[in-house]
Image (cartoon, rainbow, N blue to C red; front, top):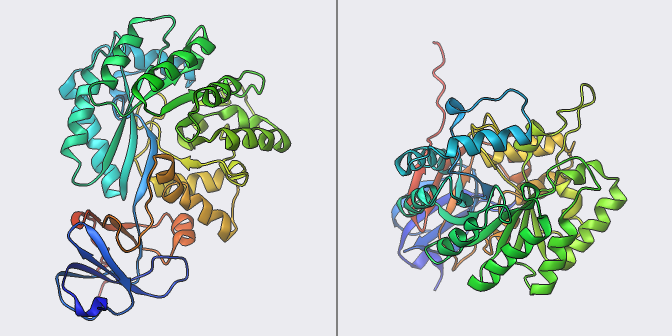
Length: 414
């Protein structure tokens, strides 16, 4: 029986689902895509004209800090350095209350949803200063916004473990109480190798992935990456480890970067590149020809590394701007990396959509039988979307409309 002979709950008509593809209709029954065909001739409870837009499974943010977003009003930025950002945020989070974290996190999630994000991984700092207040708030956000976005929570040790052993026990508790994975930050720990081992011990105990903030400097010789690669292989955690930042890759010659990429691909370690934060914090010691400090994700992807481009921080000392728009972040990366070819821009789009979903052990590809999570972009395809920072029109989560930005209307003078 063809799709045209069936009854559907929703049909989104006249959209493209691939670059340069023909217009198709997407039919939805319940929470699943039932068919993607041209000119489906049947009625539906809801019939939407996509008007030539590009349809895809939504953006995926692999690395964001919802708990410490929107705190510029309680922090000072004098030097703009990583050390200052860590110090100022640590001071501020001691005063975080659950309601406060919820309000700020919800504000960012709502922006992300309106910008087409349908899945994200957020870090929640858990230590003696933050307690479990931020974690509890983020769990509430995850529940309250499940109608629009799937949120993974990473129980995160921002300020070390060996120097603060009680944090280990707190992470252990969080992993038994709703956290989806565990995160470490070896560059803030006086014993980075031991820190990495402790994170892997928790990941092994709870059988969850691990995600590390790593090598956040411009010194190629200052690296904890070999320790993470070794631990990944020893624990058999291939495909379950991610790293963020790794800004020192930007200070290495291409041949060295490619050799490291091969090691990452062998170990099945994914990387999130965070352009807004890394551009703001890196290179503060230079008064001319300031380094970009952004890891070359496209070179890593070319060697088989799972790569993504993500938000990281919004309106705090790590990144004093931002709106949780991943298409804007993709465009920013393309500018920084000086990319122009269609195939490169398509790769960049994948880093905020399909390959990013793969980093979170999922997929955003639209096809019959998958979850009906669909976002429309005012664009003919991914390349143009990155070039123009395409406007996000509307989205559906599991077949239910989750947001609608409408279309712009110009009121011309007569």
